Length: 265
Length: 331
Image (cartoon, rainbow over all chains, first blue to last red; front, top):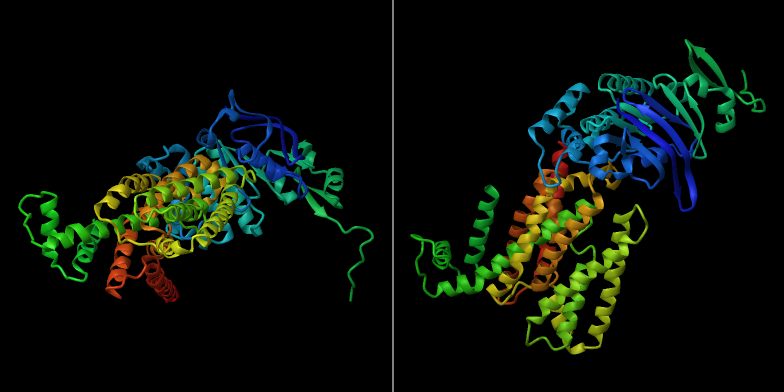
């Protein structure tokens, strides 16, 4: 089984340590969610794994050293969707998803029938048929997210990194996107790493949670191990209560004691 | 097919028009005669000199230079994701201008052959300088720092050129007419000089047209899609610069083509470089042939500098397309 191994991964930019000796391993079919307060280094960690940010430490996939890979080889193993993907105005949804096939093509080659059919399969899989010819710049938030995930799927790599896939979405679209990711990782044996802001939601689907603060791992484990009052209080500086929903923690923000009460009339 | 047909028709018609009108059949016969095409060849008397010696080389030159500038402009806009990028973005024009100015002030008006060589060297040198400075700039933001380095290099070289020019007042007119661009050339020699570079350059850009689409998601995402962004950018920039420098060295600075043609085509056929590059090659050629036709006939016998014509007809034409697209979208 394909396993991604990260050991002592650090990122320093201009002398500032943004990610500090992070280690974990993740096999295909598993979902790791990285949480942590703003500026904890979540996005930087994903970028380092995606190879678009200089880093130190080990990154391996089974017995292969990721650092020995060139852009194309790396892209065959790892797909990445940033927090705010660029959707070029004037590009059709189909052509955008087809860009996912870049890593499988020689620089000067055109797409083969196989690339076209994989793209078509992904489009059907994600129920995007009616959007095929739409301009990507005109899509709504939920549609955009599905289209960018489709591009990552067309890349056919066993590991997918999604930076904040649900942040801009309302609760309905959030659920739709998360269920989609959950289904795909099981069906297509994909290892998924996401970052997320909503703590309760982050405990719902992923198998592993990892909390970062100041670039370092402060807690790593199941949702109920990581989402504790003490952790959230210490690292987010927030007053919360944890409620239990069939073993899944629900994080409820509380009013701090010295905040003035709303006037009751 | 339709495009190359349109290109040939434009070229033939442009050869017909001038101080003395020539029938299109004569043009075809003359070309066939010189290319030794059987059956169609026929001598056409004195018209042959007008066609083969005077007009055809000029029209062909206009076509290849227009192709080059438009496709290079589209390429620059694609790799830098900057709609205002043109083939002169990284200092080609300033470098060529400085080279040509040096050649002119050192008394090259007799041996005009020196001017293209000097401006070609200047253009390539300027872009090499920009690239060296820009790459060592802010890491991870290479495309932005390249553009900034281009601005700095262009300003520096233009300042030097102005200084040199001011110290040789007697040559200002010559420098000026070079800067405004001209297709009034010495016949087939110029064509022979630039065609190999332009052919190689446009062929390369054509081959890389699919990859240019990958650039549209930005450098970071393109990298994670598997594109060696810096290497490919360097390759297409070198290709575009080589052809542009060759074109500029013979015709001087013809502005506007590299911006107007790709954008007009974008409004008509969309954003994909797979379509945009081949259409820019044909459309740029046709555009410059037409612009040159106006340049040499509108105020005949005086010739309007080609750079002025491209701006004068290019800008309103572009605004017209922009406007018609907008009302179309509203309907």
